[in-house]
Image 1 (cartoon, rainbow, N blue to C red):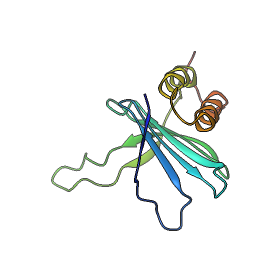
Image 2 (tube, helix red, strand yellow):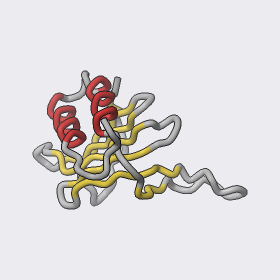
Image 3 (spheres, one colour):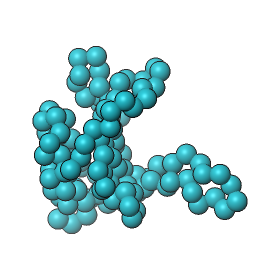
Length: 126
């Protein structure tokens, strides 16, 4: 089940964000002053092959492979990178997110579930 990380550092010049996590997901949600969602990033399959679905009010969707920055022999770990990725399993991830988000703020959970379900990019078969 996703739970909120409290006391996260807010970045100067960016919209306020909330961060939720469990063993499979990380969800970061950016909000405006009236708490409307401006965008989110849902990282899934964190332990094996992390991927990220992003949605931004201005730019729409993106689906990415998360490279953790550790594949640099002899060099310090770099910041994670997002690289365009293939199909997104909106049905499987949607079901897993519905279960994991059962105790989240209902407005956030419903919004993200809706966006997962309406993703129109390349998807894997249901």
